[in-house]
Length: 199
Image (cartoon, rainbow, N blue to C red; front, side, top):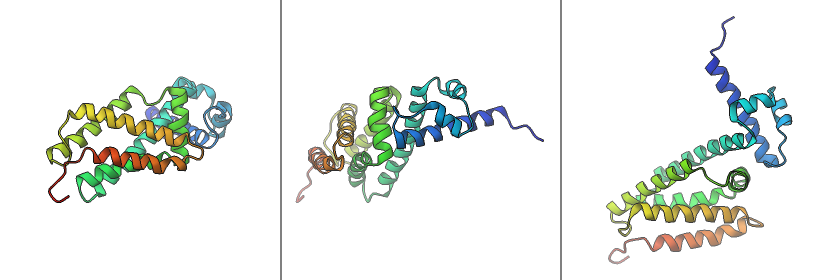
């Protein structure tokens, strides 16, 4: 019988732990999730968890990173399918706020991650700002929005979107806060646009 490569086995173990934790955190919440229970369900030990992720918080960070990556892929699809750059940017921002209502994202990313990990990691935050800066820079080049320092504007908009998403997720019920958040977002974005003759 051929022995499987160690790297493949390590990756499989990590994937099992992340998948099990993602399900448990998404359905029960971080605080109510028992490490012993969910590791036993996938045939692993608490020791495997500590070996790969350090502790329960490290596992939550890995789950959040996975969900964040999927959110970014979905938001890229929104950008790519838009008829023009401005519509794409607006739809991208609106789609992010809509995601705050999805149960898994709401519970794991918006609520538990902020409470346990303090919100986005510094690396993830910088990546978001860098991406936003590129989008804004392209819109400035195309003269769709007013000229400004793209990095400063990216920091302002990214911070506004993240805080609005948390505000939506914390609502009771959360969907009650989506409409006013979208209305506020539209006002904010309209203030950036270059007005064309006859528009």
